[in-house]
Amino acid sequence: MDPRKHLYNEGWESSTEEGYALFAEVEDVLRPIMERMSAQGYSLREVAHQMVSAAIMMEAETVLLRNMEARKREKHEPATPNP
Image (cartoon, rainbow, N blue to C red; front, top):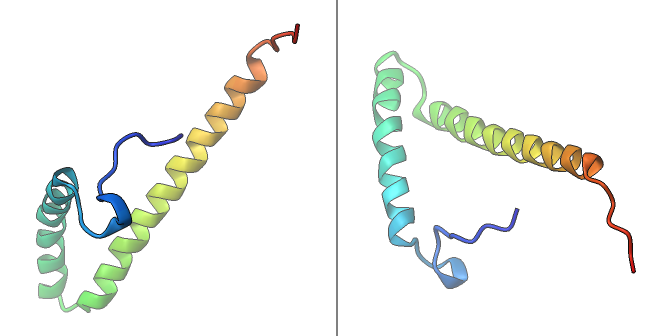
């Protein structure tokens, strides 16, 4: 899939408005979890590592499943004859 929308400006030097909004949304979700885990005595570095690992895993799973579905569709589509 070729994304048509981007969260970074040309050259990846800064976020777009949508990128900043997404960052703020994610921060709002993660902050209470980090505060809770810190209050329970967990290392913030380890908590952050788990959060980043979860995001990377979700990305990998999503890409893999999307690619598998695309291959299934390709297999079931009839081939078009070349004139």
